[in-house]
Image 1 (cartoon, rainbow, N blue to C red):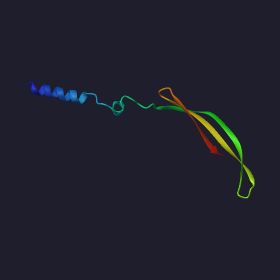
Image 2: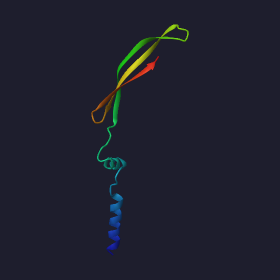
Image 3: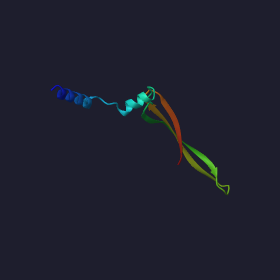
Image 4: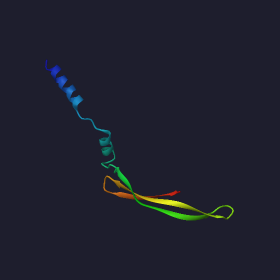
Length: 88
């Protein structure tokens, strides 16, 4: 008679037991290190420059280049600054 309630209690405990999530597994499998996640990226500077170039016949022409500087903020408080240039 005690066998049925004991089995029911064991089955209930196994079903209700918390399982390890993928994030916990990654944290413990990498020795306790989690990479910081990207929180936000914002534009900190934008400038447009005019450049002079020459075609294959030697004629000069102007074109503009837009340079944008961004700053990315991460969850551990660090930040990274990078620049992208686009020919307009």
